[in-house]
Image 1 (cartoon, rainbow, N blue to C red):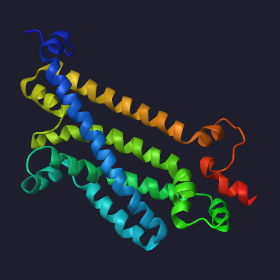
Image 2 (image 1 turned 135 degrees about the vertical axis):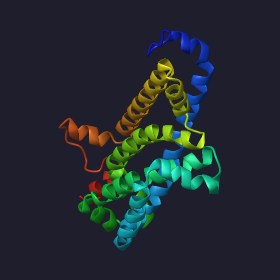
Image 3 (image 1 turned 180 degrees about the horizontal axis):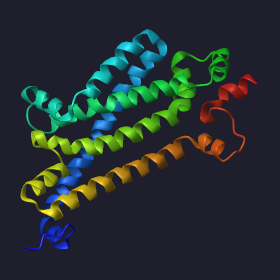
Image 4 (image 1 turned 60 degrees about the vertical axis):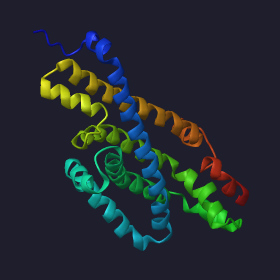
Length: 235
């Protein structure tokens, strides 16, 4: 029996199912990254303000990252059930280490001269964070987001262990039945999804950090981009 790796006939017959699993895969990835970023930013701010917490926070996120994905999902299942919630908790846990570390590195890389200039102008802590530290940390934050997003696309497939793996469901069934078209289609869609999301983050990063692009092109631009107003005013 003919069993090709690529088959338009498979897509015609199972197009609705493929689309449904692709939507699940995409929504899980985006939701996990948004939640992880919302948790990582405050944690990184705590580390920035109180370096003594760096060890415990990075240590806990590091331990979570070292737990094998199959084992983590299996351990969560008795408490959170079989399905989306269990997979989502696991994905957020794995994304935290990358996001927290990159955000901390971004904050640590802010030029002290900019901070001193803003402090001299009487910036409050919140204004300092929003207009000086956070904008200057964005390149590192976006680098972490790109790594975490691509990794999450791959990890979603492991959710098949609790019955909610997006395209991993198709991949697993294809392997069980040795249906090559199902395996190849789900694998290629995972790859395409990772590339598309990574490209979107690159474009968003370029829009959000125009000063970084100017520096790469060798043009003179105010240090800190949007947050440079403090340095300019101090000068």
